[in-house]
Length: 130
Image (cartoon, rainbow, N blue to C red):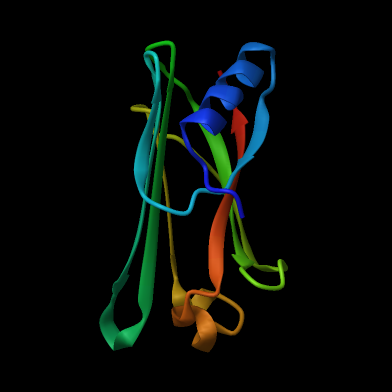
């Protein structure tokens, strides 16, 4: 999988400028991507909860030309090696500050016993709403 970087973000911004409203993000590492006065902030972490269940939390914020974009996104948990969808969640809209947050428990995922082996990744189907 090609890693998302500033070059990918610059291309994404150009397509948004040309009217694209829907796209998919596959970002491996937590980070901030900046191009001019536009940025995308992505964070993801998993923490152990009660009864040894793992909770994963993902946050995305997207600013374009200095303006926070409102969007809705759907998280899919994908198998890293075989490419199939392990779990798909419904759309969640950003809050009034333009922050998208999605969390889920390991026990919600198919074959969650293998989940901690990190043979999965999240991807986000994003739809701009402003």
